[in-house]
Length: 309
Image (cartoon, rainbow, N blue to C red; front, side, top):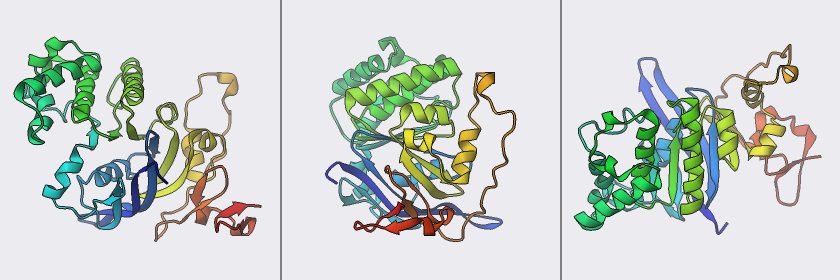
């Protein structure tokens, strides 16, 4: 498709520890289109962050391929990868650890421009001041250090840093999980406003299904390193198919006691399959792991997609 921005095909990232090889991400394939927000949801340890960092090439994948604007970037060395760093930026989960306490806010924001050799000193300073205003911070923040800010303000600085290079694609890794609920809402609204204003494409990673529904156009569900379900957000929340997705959705707290279920039927989760599951299309742009579907209920149409009878 003409509006395809990023494509990952059979992407895998493994780590080794005392117990052997751990397949943090195993055979994940997905497309991300210009202007959309793809939410990635799953519990801790499901591979969400590793997927984001591998797509950004902070981790080198064991297998698979990554295309950005139809150019493969999977095996590029750091020198050849540097131009792509301008277009792919990341908002990290913990603003207390991702921002240097030794640098002023101005130095933090100008560093990406300096590394990419963009602009003069004055131009970099002017852009940093402008970006502070864009994320809702006063220009006086420029000369301060990180310890002088609250958690929500630090995350705004992290967002400003990610936007300094005018990226086309943002990976937001649990950007509000370390913040108070009231501050979360402010940061989420800021992200949505900036996405509209700057025409950003976003991979939004979170374990909070309410946040993912608010931020995303489509939702991908990760389970034990595998992508097991993918659909537009309203379709996924209305019609979850995989038992793990059903389990996640059933965990969303409901404020109204009359709408709560007094008894929830236990959901038996499948064991991790030996090989990455193949996703099949079940209609309404909804894809789900093939081993969860009774294949007899499907037939192959002329487009060679599996569709429900």
